[in-house]
Length: 387
Image (cartoon, rainbow, N blue to C red):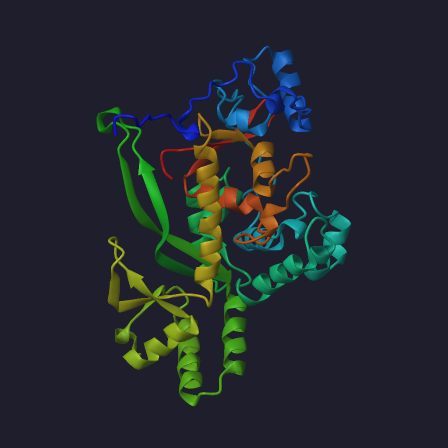
């Protein structure tokens, strides 16, 4: 035992780091040219002698030490309407422009001539940068999962931003009483994170849920009922849905329904299964068994789409030091940009399937989650204390 000698294993040998860096990093290609929007921004910075940001890559903008220069908050959004327009016009504007390739608000994917003359399916299949299987998946999702004709009240708040929320609320009620639209209140449908700006509360964060108001034109609502009736074979289901249709026509402003409205529990259960009513929940997100809210079939899928967009928006802005970005940069991140500055078309894949970012921004703006302002180089968007 006394003659044994111990030597260090090769794996325990400590290697010193090359002080001059690795050859691969040393021979790395130079930084890519700036994106057109970044080059324009840099030119504006020089012209206006504003504090310069690092513009070598989109990632650096999020760690910039400088806030966006705010000109004013008198923003004119691309889809802005005035009080001379009615709620029906606003709903039609949102619905006709909700898919990016079929929007006339921007021409990022299709010309206005194509949007006017071609079907949604044609516009989707002529998109470049997407596999045929992806395009087929987009069409399947839109035609079988997403209900047609729904908008949120928050989106209308944004489209009438100059007129104020009271203007929108008043005109919604007038349109309901005229029998033009139906409103649904989906309880606790949107998760929220509230960050207090009060110094006394030291930025306390609270979590919760908020109700979401969804609107649809009356004609679309009753067409959906008739479409559902035409597919039913069970006599009990047919009888219940016809009874429900009669009830809603006699009560155009009602939002909720219960056994007190001459409906049996079994009938209400059937309406839940058909998607025309949903269980309500309280502020603790606990199910209320005695009351049901009127709804629209697959409304939850639509709200999930909007909520996914809201989550993406909050996460994207949260990554920035000052929780703000230029609109052009937001659209770039929404699409995804590869190393050659080409769009990845990420917004046409799951979970968004081509839903237009304008309506994600509109819903978040109307909900008070973000604010919008003008800068020397375009619109900027920033998170508020409500997430």
